[in-house]
Image (cartoon, rainbow, N blue to C red; front, side, top):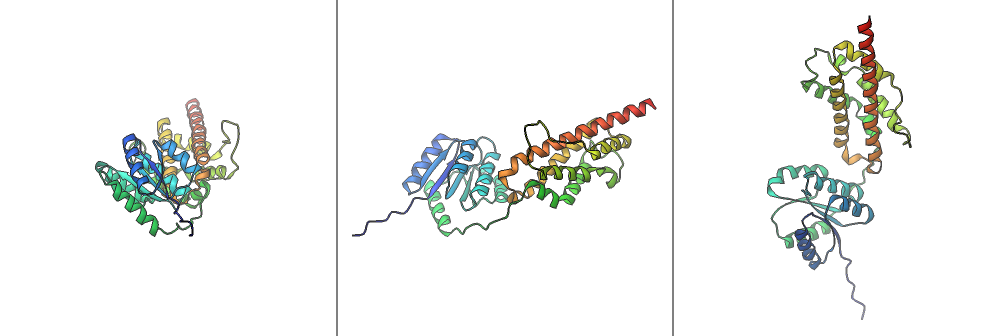
Length: 284
């Protein structure tokens, strides 16, 4: 007689900070023939995603933060795009959980639900699942360069809505000032090889110096300079969020650190130029 062949169990990563829920779901899914690995927090889940492969992910939304489930789904989507992703949410969270659709979660389950039903759902979805289409990933610099015009337009819209900034009567061109050149300088730095042991690889920026001088002449206060710099960071990160499916996550962290360092360096140089212009004006 030919030996009986046993199918390889499908591997499931289960993420929930409630121990009783983890134990109950693990036991039930294993009885249904799944190979379950359980994680109690986001850090543990991210480690498992990078060191092992899974056929499916089941993650709670709150652990204890609403963004935790989204973070795990995002990591799985980009590290293992063919894995089925299921987000579990309590009724009060269901509206917020719909945002998971933007992160390409396959299913949203509302508590309470039957774990046996979940096992049937997993089996059905994984049986009929098609391989994910391969998407070419981009560096942050490439995304910002491609979205340069929209970055400036988005920043301008945010600045116009800011009570701290919009009381000055400026044209759109006057309001953006040297912003396009500052973003160009940031992109150039992002394109350079990642650096080093130095605290910062920022270099002197003529645009930042000119921007500080312009803002003094336009009637800005130092606090307004800081505020518009914060708007720039929000705008840049919002652009990355809008292109999250295209991001090369293996290089995202150093690029995000570079953005923060460069924007801060530009603000420092603009502030120094602003103060120098103020002192020269007072001495005249």
